[in-house]
Picture 1 (tube, rainbow, N blue to C red):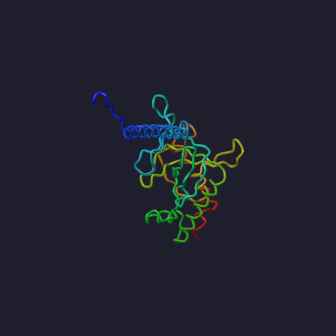
Picture 2 (picture 1 turned 60 degrees about the vertical axis):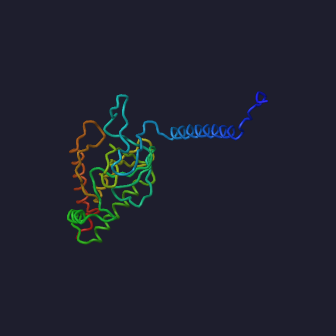
Picture 3 (picture 1 turned 90 degrees about the vertical axis):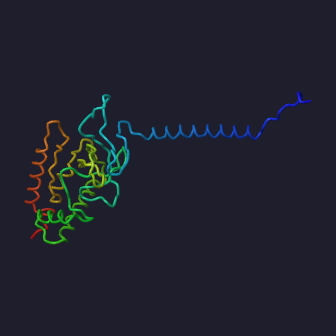
Length: 243
């Protein structure tokens, strides 16, 4: 009798194996779909965005096949200003084809609406010969409104080395705003415009303009000093607030 016995198939075990296999197949398909979706969103040639907090490596200059930077600067066109409470005359959030980043201008510094250190406030008041805190705040508002109005509306250009401020993680840059939407329209350096309108202090930097390989930091410094004298002579911006 024992020879005629056939063991029954354990249906619960078979069902468990089937469900497990189906679950594994679903996981594999989902992982493949997520990977493909991420690849579709990647901008060719864009630096990797590895985090926004200060201290992270963040984006970097695009490199060639040897791993060397293609240029000292990366030029990013079709940038748009984003609304952000931190936006002021020299710092602003920008939507680029590579993502959203906080940028800060090389070479210039404006009075901060959120409140400067006492030393920075005193320096600005001495520089523009201001007498009251109200004058200082007025200058901060003028600088903020000038920058936002200049960058709002038309796409603009950001040129950066992806170096960042260790404090808030903002990336240093040059910003260029076009006169109009016409092809070949002149691009104006925002930092130079701020100084020319008496809205910013000059902050000498070791980084030259990216316009040509032969440019030197001193060349742009001289341009800024000339713009500052022009603002003084025209009594514009902060130079119009002192008695």
